[in-house]
Image (cartoon, rainbow, N blue to C red; front, side):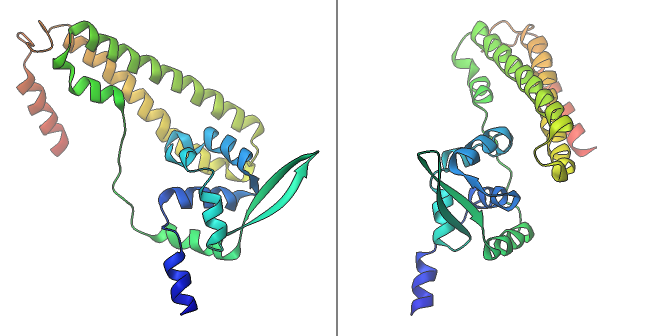
Length: 213
């Protein structure tokens, strides 16, 4: 009965659960330190972690995957979270689990998708905003990578950081290339509802051929 009760009470584990557990596997953190580290690293590819940051460590403790120890910095109380042996084992098992389908949330592309409800100027403004954001992210990535190469807080994990940051950079460069191409195409349109002589079917056929080659 006791084991069944504990099983029912165990909180549902999500990718965010394991993302926070992964950070605790690197070292112990206060919630404030976790928030800073999430902003520096996980937010590039899992921004949901920040929204759950103040709940997830408590759930990990409740499930026996982490511990919470009370301390203080001067007169300010603080809670330090650390991973347990059960937490490390749970993290290892999760690494073997099948991947969830990849998802993407990109408001700019949603606006492009419904651009025919507005004007060409609005569409071009959206494309420019997407391009500028990508440029800013590339600059931020370069700074982050440079700092890590020179004075990483976790030198033993540089190879992991390099592996993931390369994909982030390639994605932002792809966004930049796409905005340049999209602007050139839109410049040929008469309006967002009338592309004039621009041949959308030819573009789609080229894309279909590229996807199967």
